[in-house]
Image (cartoon, rainbow, N blue to C red):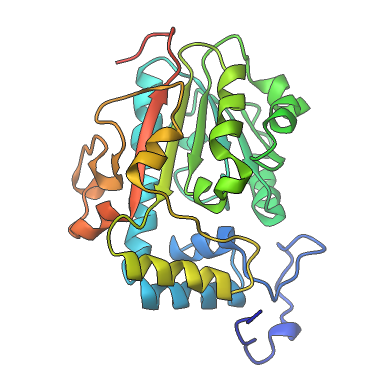
Length: 284
């Protein structure tokens, strides 16, 4: 499989103290590439090359990931206003400005990611914070995630918990049965709990989005994009009552300021988002 060419001297880089042992610095990471597109500092040359290749195909990618971040803020703020004060952020990625524990400082938050770099940096940021923690785990294994001591020690499963899965489920093909494992998360949650999703789609701009997926595939990353249509993203909320306005384009979910609104209508055709509540706990 094709690997992005290494930059001169890439193997001689010495300022990599923040990279955990065992990480192949010649293989790009989706989490680190996302960090690069957000303007973060925890990424490698190979991640920046993948990001730059993505920008050639999808010039609005930087704007899109920032709008997704704005959706995270709105969704968390809405749920806090509804009385939710526990969050399980799965696929949380590299920590950057606007983490859940910053948006909701009085809430309890568990971050979950399979990327060891994301987990290592989360631990650094959360050092000394008794209301938030991080675990390295795979979202496709809900029984493992939900039984971790860090999770059961911080979150009260007799009370509502919001599960956040932003820009992560499109790395899980149908063969892994995401509807099925989301149902297993749902079944462990108390009434009134929530599911928050953002998910890439190719409902429009099919050729562009197909090339974006090919860029990730060519990078030799372990992750591959799997686009889902509106009806398929809606199906991920099976067993949850969708909060108005339902599953919509990323900038159309309850925007409350200019920073939430995109000038490019195509942005709303590339990522669907939604918030669902488990029946029985009250929602509006």
